[in-house]
Amino acid sequence: MSLLEKIEKLQKSPESYRRKILAFLMIIIIPAILSVWFFTLNFSFVGSNKKKVEIQPPFALVFDGFTETYSVFKDKILSLKSINN
Image 1 (cartoon, helix red, strand yellow):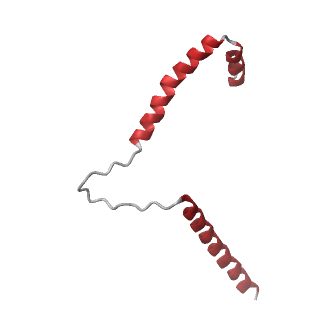
Image 2 (cartoon, rainbow, N blue to C red):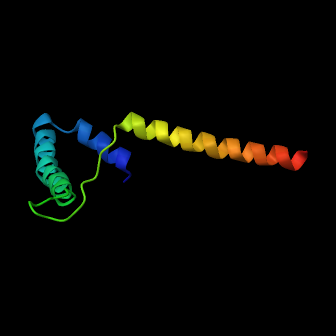
Image 3 (cartoon, rainbow, N blue to C red):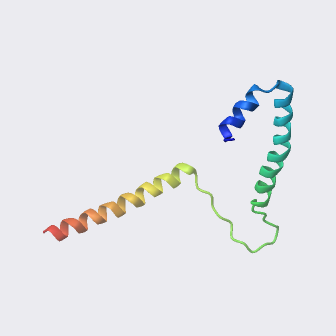
């Protein structure tokens, strides 16, 4: 039985059964997501010697990426022009 067939079967089942399935999945999935999130947090303690990382805005990162890509592309074009001359 494929996943789509299981979904169709679940859609045809009574609403009370679907609510039970939803509650069960929420009890399983939400703690899993929260635990992954919790364990990936970066804890910093007072007095630690770690350097603080400066967080850049997302658009600045995108702009820097485009700028770097443009400069690499420009260098490649200039090197091709010098080969042709």
